Image 1 (spheres, helix red, strand yellow):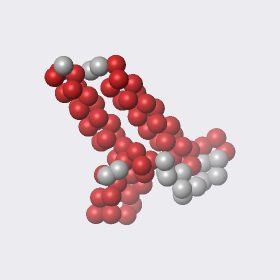
Image 2 (cartoon, rainbow, N blue to C red):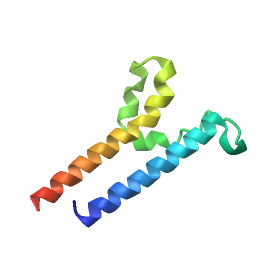
Image 3 (cartoon, rainbow, N blue to C red):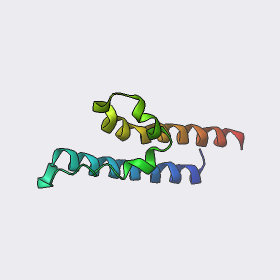
Image 4 (tube, rainbow, N blue to C red):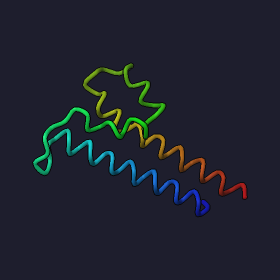
Length: 88
């Protein structure tokens, strides 16, 4: 995997972990934060297009599927970067 891909994957991972942290803090009220139903809003753009399919699952799973959707994009990004590294 080349340097540019490592940087992109690293930035995406950092954004995902930060958004996931904000989601967990807002969902469970950690560190004295008020519980906020919009705490997962930063996960939405990171999880596109997979989070558009979430409505097909039962509603109690929606928040957790939205939190996991960016992980699928991270895996796909890593696979694409790995394949690009093998071509050059």
